Image 1: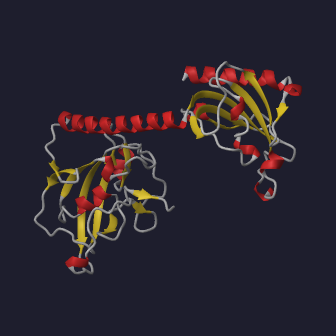
Image 2: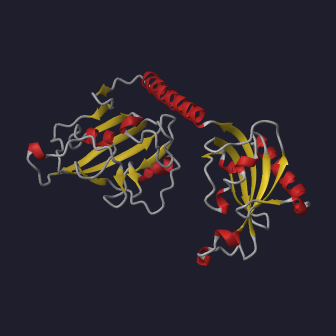
Image 3: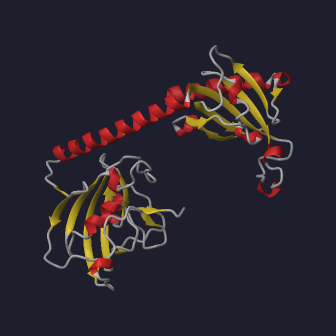
Length: 330
C-alpha cells in the first residue's frame, strides 16, 4: 500500500511541475496536448505493440476520476491507428518503456455531436487529463506467448489447489466423467428430478479460500458478511433442462433426489472457466453446499427429445429467481 501511495505521489508531484510550464505542452494532429516529463532510452512504441501502463484520469480541478494504482493493477492495450482524440493512440508512439507523460484531451472534442452526454464536471473548453506511465512494451507475439503461459499456469494451479483442498479436508468425493466431484451429506430415497421438473434449491457457494460469494440462506449470508441488497432469502426455483446454468449445476441437479443434501466441488471448466463472474476470479473452482428442498413434476418430453444435461450457459438474469450462477444479459 505504501508503495502504491508513494508512486501515486510522485506522479502528482511531476504533474504539478508540468502544470507550471503549460507553454511547453505540444499538440498532436488529433488535437491533444502533451508533455513527456521522463524520457527513457530505448525503442519507441510501435504500431501493434502491446503496452502495459498505469494511468490517472483527472478533471481540470484535479478530481481523480479513475486510477489504475487504486484499482490495483495496470491495463494492457494493443497500439492501433488513432480513431479519436481520446484513445491516446497518437501519444503512445512518442513514448518508450518506463516513460511518463501528461496528456490533456479537449472535452469539446470528446463530446462533439452529443453534448447531452457532457457531465457538469466537464464544462466547455475544459480538459480530460491523463497522467501516464508505460510499464512494459511487448511485441504482439511476445504478449500472446506470455498470456498463454499465464493461462497454463492458472490451469495447473487450479488442479494443484483442488487436490490440496480435497486432501486437507480428508474428503472422498465421487468424481464423474466430466470432472464434477460431489459428496452426498444427506441421502434420500425420494425421486430424482428429470428434464422439465421444477427444483427448489437452497445453497451456499464459496471459493477454495472459504470466501462466500452467494447463498439463498439469510443466516449464512450474515455469518459470511455477504451483502445482497433486495435479495429474497428462500429456495431458488430451477426448471431442469430449461433454466440456463453452469454445467456443474445442471449435472449435479440430475443426480440428487428430493430431500438430499450434497457438497459439490465444481472445476472451473464446469463453472465460469477463464471469464470469472463478479467476485469469482477466472479459473476458480466453486464449492457449493446444496439442498434439494422439493422436486415438482413438470411436463416431460420423450427421452429422445429431452435436453441433455451439461448446459454450458450460466443462469441469465430474469429467467428464474436469484441463483448462485447468475449472469447479466449480454
